[in-house]
Image (cartoon, rainbow, N blue to C red):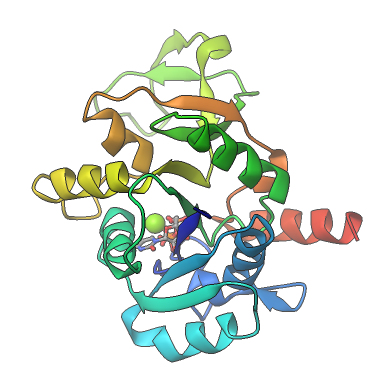
Length: 239
Ligand code: CTP
Ligand code: MG
């Protein structure tokens, strides 16, 4: 079976601070969500459910309508990313439980098709959860949990960076397993503070191994204005 996907685009983008939700912010002429959708189509995804802010459904539908090559459906997301992914999974048409489902963020518009194919291939090879990730390049320190004073926080020393990875999307799973993981998790966490930020964590909570495959610097997440500027430069460079 061809892969299917949930594309999360229901966030507000509060840290970006644009006057439209982050997924609709333009990058070299097209909204972020359209860039991410094109990558999924290029990777052979057959059906995509896009989660959008409930008050921007028509705008997200109109943006996604320019992309052909896959069945695309736009539904209202939830209060957290986890809730949005769950809503997206429920909106997928019936299909084989062992098909690969990709969960991708509209906030990662430049994730290259090679990265998507790596994730799909690993799921098809039998891995129950696959995440792309990159080594951490900064020195990372742990800080004391007590409240910091005005001058700063107290460092408890550096963490061993060589065993740390920064996780990206898309993440891939056998569809039935991801649905089961979300159903189990829906009984636990709901609000933005306690919800999982990552789907692999939900599958890991069921006792499955998570495979980490090489990520790609192009799959950077757009969080603040600086990231948008970097993405624009990278896109212009690659054209
Ligand atoms: N997302 C979603 N539903 C939510 C929250 C987030 O579908 N309730 C999606 C976002 O649209 C984004 C991805 O999850 O594609 C990653 O979230 P993040 O980068 O945090 O985006 P926002 O929540 O929109 O940004 P911010 O946290 O700055 O408000
Ligand atoms: Mg957020």
